[in-house]
Image (cartoon, rainbow, N blue to C red; front, side, top):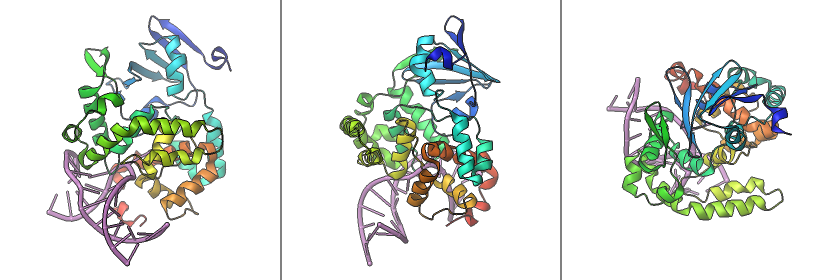
Length: 310
DNA sequence: CACCAGGTAATTC
DNA sequence: GAATTACATGGT
């Protein structure tokens, strides 16, 4: 479909674009734990760096304002990154009809989009995510960017850096990873950064093998140290745009066990059954659950978490 | 101070 | 294969 027929978009002044959006909530999308590089400003706008490009973005009702950017960048980067071509209302309906127990999470997370991120960046950030807190993950990623990322530009007096290339991070020592707060994951990251080019080639060969095989691409990712089933699923979903995924972490597991009457017990079975149920909307369904689970994390922690599942 | 965090790898049976 | 455990770091 042609871009002009699909989007109501125009330049309002030099380097500044306005875009009308449906089923899109900026704050939820960039602040729901799928990415770690957007910072909220005082006025509820956000600043981030993607593919080395700095962007300031805010939403008023159904209008998104982005700068500094151009129509070429919108077409070549931002519409894909924010996944604006996909029909989320259709996925929404499918999720609720296939799983009525999803109604609450679907209502709470309405407007979330699954970002199309860089595979390399998602690999590193989700290795860091293992047994870690989101604020600490974000802090580590910020540290990596300012130390080893390329300068992306300045916005409102502050310097911003892109996520470091695998060439840059491939040079890091154990101590340098630790200084970025990687903790016990540092040795995994040293090896993964070095093995990345070979793994990525293998992955592309695998994905281009015209047939079904798409299930097995995760096994390729899991050859990387620090990448297990959950992280490979996150890389597939957020980094490769492969929506037939259902990463199960402690939060999703808790919500699934509490809400889904026929929830299997093992994470692996939860994953396969959810994908079977939601199909291409599985990744989105998982993100809705994760978002809802963390909405009231302050109350939920403490007394409830003990009695939940086991 | 014990427990937890978007799990994984190593060990054990 | 399933179950158990250590793992660093910083916040309650």
